[in-house]
Image 1 (cartoon, rainbow, N blue to C red):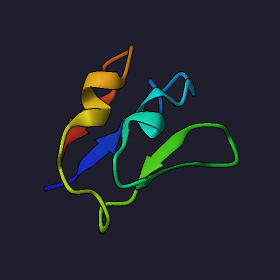
Image 2 (cartoon, helix red, strand yellow; image 1 turned 90 degrees about the horizontal axis):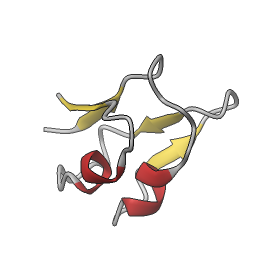
Image 3 (cartoon, rainbow, N blue to C red; image 1 turned 60 degrees about the vertical axis):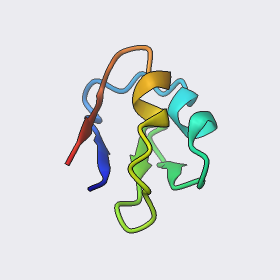
Length: 58
């Protein structure tokens, strides 16, 4: 299973992107982050790094 960022709650801090060991999180044009479901290894590092708890497991 992969993870998903709830964009409406994302504060664009980039903490999740920095915590991802496989670099599957990228910044969109609006500054929000998105997780590539195909590349996510479901490690949960992004969940623990997010200061606003806006990442869910799919």
